Length: 316
Image (cartoon, rainbow, N blue to C red; front, side, top):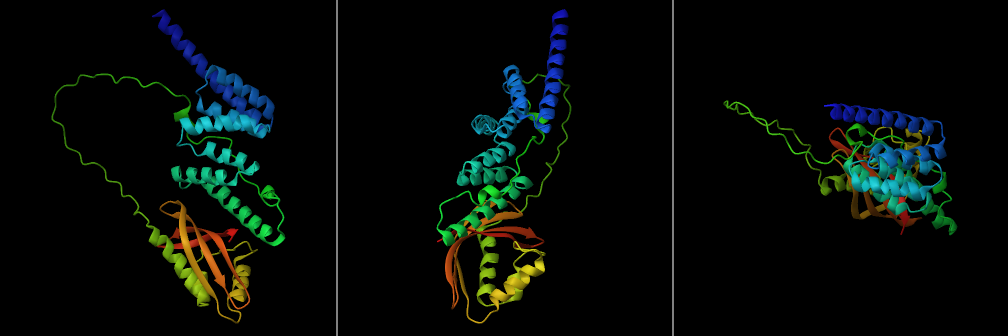
């Protein structure tokens, strides 16, 4: 009995100390004392090396302390042991972007969206990354310079400093055998399983059709249908929606025919309400022609899919 009491008190003290130390680690991060936070995290991991929250916060400390190699190691361990967590992938993507590994960063962000389709930070970072790459592609095409970080170094992406619902993941516990409980025999009432209505699966054809309609309206100079393909209030990088509308009107309705063709569709990421699609776009007018890789984000608004992001990834 005494041994059990001592064990319970020891467990309680250990849990309390860990909680206080995590608060200390979070405080040091908030105060931007990253070197001290990294040391605190390492000391905690020596006591409980499998604590998920401590692993993550320690990685954050090393990342902000300009020690990306150590941070990367912890993030990769977390991704392997807890693949359902989007935050380690998001932060590791930030490290890869700093290193110029843009394809690996994009893959990490897209994977985090597959596990958490509504993950706002990953969507935001992915869109900013696409915009930066698009600007870089055009800059290279025009200037022929070879400095891949001239534009990418200026975009500001969001790293995360906390895990969502980490309380259920703080430590990895061994499985415990189920206890056998004797109950008196009694008639078992039949219960119907609760049926949850899943959203209908979106097919590739359903996503491609609004893009084909958009290209058709563009080619036919049907400006009303062209702008209807976009979400309400779409700015397209301009100061306001009206500024964008005026700019596109001047480009599309000027004299001369337009021919827009789309091909090679690839769905990069998809949920029931949002999708990112890559495709080849061929444009031809009497005075200009080009062929580029476009990347468009479609968002389901009501019963329709609307363009909410548009960027050029590469010039072909």
